[in-house]
Amino acid sequence: MILKEINLIQSQLQQHKANHGKFTIEVARLELLSTETHVRLADLLRSSGLGSNQKDSERHYLQALQEVARLEKLTFLEEKPSLLYNLRIDKAAAHLGLGSVYRDQHSFGEALEQLTKAHDLTQELISIEDSPDQQDRFGVILTTHGEILNLREQLIPDQATSENLRTALDKQQRAVGIFQYLEQTTSGPLREQTLRKLMDTLISMADTLENLELYEESQMAMQEAQVIGKRALSENNASSLHLHQQLCASTKDTMDARRELDDHTSTLHIGSKIRLHGLLNQTLNGKKGIVLATDSNNRISIQIQGEKRQVSIQIFNIRYWGDPEQNCQTLYDKVVAKAHDEIGLLRLELQILIKKSGNKHINTARARYNLGRALWLSNNPLETTQTVEELNAAILFMTQREPNHHSLSETEKVRDMALEVLANFETQGTLSA
View 1 (tube, rainbow, N blue to C red):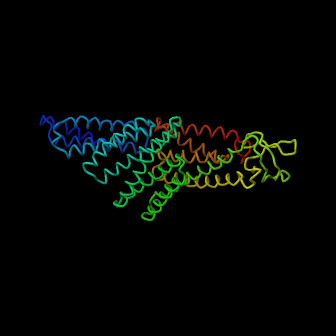
View 2: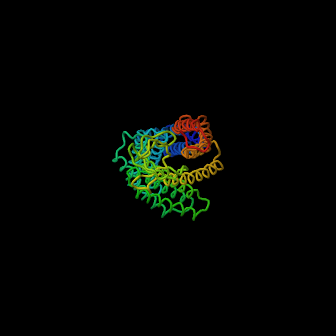
View 3: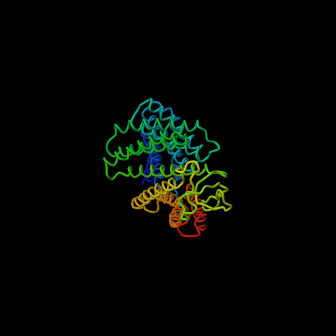
């Protein structure tokens, strides 16, 4: 439909130029409308989620920028400041759109270049004439810029610096301030969009704070996001923001629990003095020993004190010699409980997305990946089998519709690891090898 609009505008432009033979105000109006329509179509293609649209989206953004560059050279527009202003709004929107396309492709250098152009141009436009629309776009630019800086630090750890993370945090904090202000002044259908942007920025900021090891501040950001989710639900019981916040918080809680368990078990080393606990063989409970080595199946090889024999013990049956209450069992149980909560929310999200968007949508494929990954981390046969099923469904869609999407290779990687783990299960209900 929008493509037909572009073709119609182009036809009107050619006809008008043929009739008048010069650049007129009507031609300028049509040129501006053409540029706006290219950006609108590019936005629609980028966010459609139906597959194979990223290249077309990029093409229309670039087409809009080419048209703006050509028109900016015309001295005629200097006499029409309102036309020039609106033209530069489209230019800023096209740079922001391209930055988002390149972010999704993990082309971080190109993404940051486009976002910097969008940032500088939007600041210039705000200085000329401020408006809620301009502030909203500026907030999105800052959020996206911060998100990319944070994501790049995670995916390219060799280039990670605290300075980049601090820059990301500064941009996210400024974006939060913008959306908090807009929230107070926005009503109607646009309010939910503003609340979502505020919530997403807070969640992204929480990730950055955690990467900076500012854990209390990260938790505070997540709590603010929770307040927004509850507020959105009270204003509109059909709002999806509450579930979105719950899911992000649940995923973070599970990751925190896993890190806590990893931090605890990593302190076990060869020579650690331990005490055995919770074994079915009651004769071993309470005995002291020394860690000799790590075995397979999450087991530790122990030399029993005062005896010649050695035993292989699961990590959650081990307590520290000097601190009997410090053990892995409670931490492991906490991970399991958090993971079950997360899986339940991920299943609910997938059901909602299938009902809303159908199976052939990139958001549904991403939800399948998120659910599959959570199931795989549960580390037991039934959930690992379900992991493979969910990931295969996501891979089938992306192979057919989004073959160049960066998520495809990651999804295939997790699926292959899940298949390897599945093959290593010796007995139903046991941990993987």
